[in-house]
Image (cartoon, rainbow, N blue to C red; front, side, top):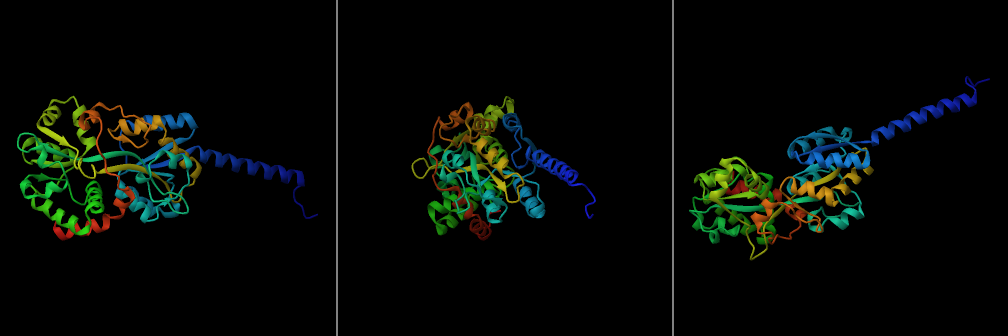
Length: 352
């Protein structure tokens, strides 16, 4: 008699163990761990609606893009992250290059999101997708500067704008992406010469964020600056008298309407390389491409939806763009791939 337990009891215990294990996996599947660089109050409704529709709870960790990528690297295979939300093509490209994302195959996402706004596909699928866009536009002093002198990115480097230009750091992802897109349009040599021209035209050393550049134009410190559209829309929608005063003094131009169009950047998402809940993570990305999510994702933070069938209902963006504008069609994956070479150019021309 070598059996210490009768067989039926062994089966019962084994069954109970398996049942508790399967219960454990169900419990795990009901939670999605999200690392997010989007710090927008309006996204709360987006997550709540997903949980309501699917029963999957969202645990969110907030950090900036660079912090999230550093954390994923440090955590390695032990990372609890399922979904990564980032707010820039250069950062998404870096995450992909560093092997931090898992490629997925989703017919729904491929149908909904234009090829130019997602990663280049591989045999394994696609590693990241854009879910909203923002344009990088020119803000100028309506009293001092003529619109036609600043209605292309190239003109910002011309002698006529000497001493007028203000930007945030050249190495900030929003600028790296703009410069990477210019490289796709103009080639390397011309882009470097253009960056040198931008440095020569600075009113002051690069500092602060996009909102600071807009305010510096309004105060007369600068004549012209670069900004993402949602910073301008925030000031337009603000009820604060000082914000209204700022917007009264500045004009906004969507550059390069007669050539290749205005530069677009994206906010996007990826499934983490070591995600434990790949199916739920994929489901969440597919949810972000649905019309109701697109409305929150875009309009809540003054961005444009990426899904063509979703209509914009944001008065500030409509007023700013005149309802429509010509956007560039260069794939954001190429823009992201150019960032290392752009950074070397910035170092050479002394763009801080």
